[in-house]
Length: 208
Length: 227
Figure 1: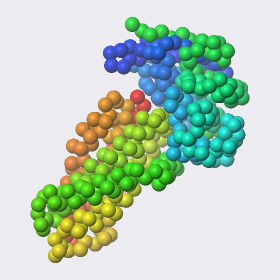
Figure 2 (figure 1 turned 120 degrees about the vertical axis):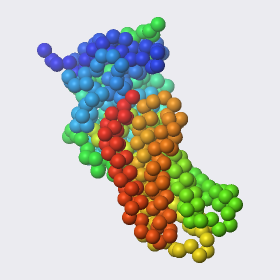
Figure 3 (figure 1 turned 90 degrees about the vertical axis):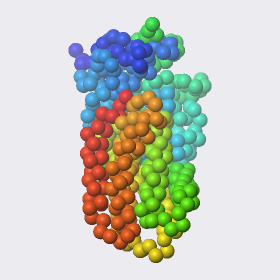
Figure 4 (figure 1 turned 45 degrees about the vertical axis):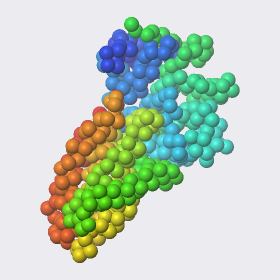
């Protein structure tokens, strides 16, 4: 039996006194796509930050390949990539400079930036500041940045938010081209899109 | 080609270069700090209503200016990054998280040195005409050691506060009291330098403070930057 890529064991979190997650258990095998569904306030973003290792849950633990996500040593952090509501891009740097910086921070050659730009169909925008790109272009650049280090687990927080249909299609095409053995966890409001993209769904509810 | 952990020095170099590139392209912070330094020096001089202020008053006003300017810089280079989510990108990267602190401290030090290009000549304009001319090298060393301490402390406090709500309030509340010992030593160092005296003892104190902040940052940054 394949070892799980991601294990959620009784994950819970609260902000102040408000509990947003309680006792979430889930196991995800490598190469699977998990969609997190739920209304605003159901803890989707919180759970994604816990999975990415950006937030330590108040209860339970998140394991990536058997190791606690928030305690991954530097050498193993590249296994997890995250793109949130905000694109995690330096607005004053060009698209290429953002990817070159990312390559440098992951110990990869700068030349990979050009390959990533081509894969994201952003060659024509390579020298434009990230802040000057359209919403769809920024999302594709954010995804290219997240995919650059070839992560084993990709965590996406509402990647289609604010995009028109054409941009959604291009983003999904980029995601499809990156599949392979990539394990993907993404949050979305849209059940239809989730059913289309995901192998498994996890419904979260707003806790009383 | 697989990603791998990036050594401390390389990560610091990349991040400092990024911060300074961004500041060069849109130098709002450098301009704000320079203007603040000029206004503060003039207001402190004329507000004190002393026609021939002693060296300690002039140098003291310079350090108060630097202290407050560091707060400006910390808010810009650290909290702005947090607000835009860029800190998440850095926290997830396979780099020692202490490198994030060190890079921010170096970038702030560079900005403080730039600000001193305005502030130091201005403060010397207000010295008594018969004040001794300090050795430029000694003064630069004293300023650099003090700047490093202020910047290192500011970055550390910002890193610790970055994960909590109300960090805009937390940063000055933690930073200002913690900076007092450094400020006293840096002031003594600068006054000695301005008077042409030996700066060895106060400089040793400033460097000791810098080293302690560095050790603290090494101990806490790995964990402080996650929520």
